[in-house]
Structures are given as C-alpha cells and as structure tokens.
Amino acid sequence: MQDMKDKEIEINFRDVLKTPIRWFGIVYPYFITVFILLGLTFIHKLDIIHTNETPPALKDTSAVVEDLTPIKGEVSTGIDLGSIRKPGDKQIQKGKELYVANCAVCHGEQGNGDGPGGMALQPKPRNYHTTEGWKNGNSFSQIFKTLQEGIPKTGMTSYDFLPVDERLDIIHFLRTIASEIPAPTETEIKEMDQTYSLSAGKKVPSQIPVSLAVVKLDEESKSDADIVKKIVDNISNGKSETGYSVFSKVTVNKKKVVASLLKSQTWRTGTNEFLNFVNGNRQSGFKAEVLLLSKDDLTILYNYLTATIKVN
Ligand code: HEC
Image (cartoon, rainbow, N blue to C red; front, side):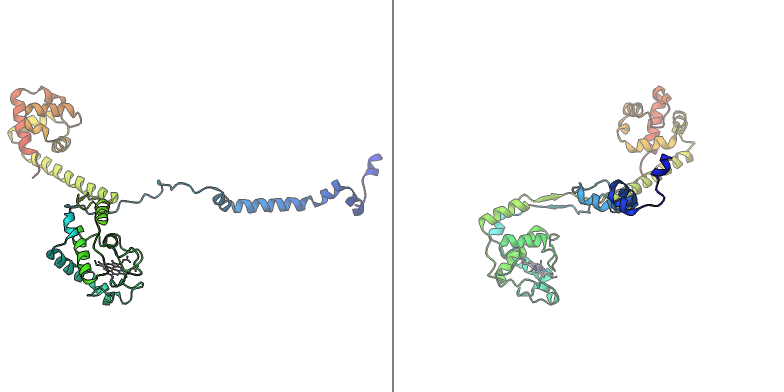
C-alpha cells in the first residue's frame, strides 16, 4: 500500500522543477545527444586536430626518394689568376664572340638591354650602362655569380655550362663596352678563387640517376649472359677438341664455369693460379676432382680454358 502511494499517476511538472534530480532525469536525453554529436565532430575532424597539434615531422625519406640528377662530369684546368687581372686581346676577342653568340640577343650588341629576344621579358634584360637596379651587382665577381647561378625566375638563366675561362672572357669583354663595370679588385679575385676554385681547377665526377644505373646494369648483365651462352655453345660444338673430355669430366655446370671464369683474370696467369681460383670459388661450377687432376691433364685443361673462355 505504501508503494502505491509513492507512485504518481500523472507527473506534476511543477514538482519536478523543484527537485533537481528528477529534472535532470527528463533532460538527460538532450545532454547525451549533444555529447554524442560533439564526439562525432571530434572524430570527424581528428586529422585536422592532429596535424594542428603535432610539431612538423622530419621529412619521411622512406616514402619518396628523390633520384639523383644526371651530372656530366667535367675536369677544368686551373685558371691563371694573372689573366683575370690583365686579360689579353685574345681573351677579349673570344669574349666578344661568346657575347654575340650567347647574350646579345637579349642584352643588345652594345649592352643596352635592347636585344630583340628581350622585348617581351619582364623584368627586361639588364642595360649594362647604368649602375642602378642590379640584382647581384655590377662588380666583376657579382657578374660571375650571375653567370654561374642565373637570376631565378627571370629570363636570365645560368650559364654554368660555359667553361669558367669562357665566362671570364665574356666579363672582360663586357668591361670594354660598359665602363660602368669596374675592374676586379685583388680581394674580389681572391674570393672568387676560393669560392669557385678557379686556380685549382675542378673535377666533377659524372653522376647518373639510380634508376638509369639499374637499367644499364641490367643491360650489361644481359649482354654478359649472351657472352656466356655463346661460349658454352662453342664448347658444346667442339666436343672433338682435346681439352673437351677433361673439361666435361671436371665440371658440374658449364654455364657457371664460364661465367665465373669470365669474371676473373687471375686464373689465366698459370695452372697454380687456376687451382687457387677454383679452390677459392666453390660456387664456380667445377667438381672437386679438378683439384686432383694429373699434371698433364691439368695443363690440357688449362690450355683449353684459356683458349675457349674469352670475350669474342
Ligand atoms: C633570354 C634573354 C637573356 C639572355 C640570352 C641573357 N640574359 Fe642576362 N639577363 C636577362 C634578363 C631578363 C635579366 C634581368 C634579370 C633581373 O633584372 O632580375 C638579365 C640580367 C643580367 C645581368 C644583371 C644581373 C644583376 O645583377 O641584376 C647580367 C650581368 C647578365 N644578365 C649577363 C648576361 C650575359 C653575360 C649573358 C650571356 C652569357 C646573358 N646575360 C644572357 C636576360 C638574358
């Protein structure tokens, strides 16, 4: 009976508002919905939140490996620094030819920056007859830098493909048409010498991309395989030759024998070196019996091998 009394037949909302616990009981579905929505939003934006919080990671070098760029090897002999201080007529003449061939189309015959090739360029090619507005500068070494590196994002590209002495000759010539370009100072010459190792010369080894190297290696090993096959064919065709019977007696795998002997030159110097080679290369395709051959048979085999196993 007591129970019945506690239960209300109809909810009296005024009373509910007075007792907070019951009030919560009615609004909790609302809170749960809000929490779930917040949670969903959080999960949805997780990648953004994540990237905003993590400090910049180190470049993942395992993902994309940039291949090497091809570099054509060059060996430049050292420059006589005296020729930079006092260029000869020949150098200036050479510089003029190079200027006409490479630069005049943009910079104009007289260096006024009015060559036909520069009309549409923005910025315009430099007029050498003014000292203002130069990006690198109008000193001898600054012009050398311009020729080495170019001016990024302009029509002025790098001329590092011209040998160092030719670039120097061009600048010598420029000085004859533009008095605005001063003679190089001793400090400048010294600094240029250090930066570009002018007097020491340079040795740049050739470099090719790894991907290309792999292709090349593959081609090479293919042609190796061709050579091996050719030699093995020759051997099989010459079964009547004296050395053949000894040869076939001591070999397990003719191809292997030919391939491994082709790779080495040491065994060719004598029967002892040949035995050393076989002893040290257990994968060379010979049977162990080869080490037990009589002296005569060994000589026959050795002569046979030196005669048959060679390129061409
Ligand atoms: C395709 C046109 C073009 C050719 C060819 C060209 N240049 Fe330029 N050169 C430019 C342009 C454009 C600028 C201006 C770049 C700037 O102001 O940012 C420039 C700027 C220069 C400058 C001034 C750099 C500075 O400090 O502001 C020098 C020096 C120069 N060139 C030398 C040469 C020489 C020497 C050659 C030939 C070996 C050459 N250029 C060939 C277009 C050319």
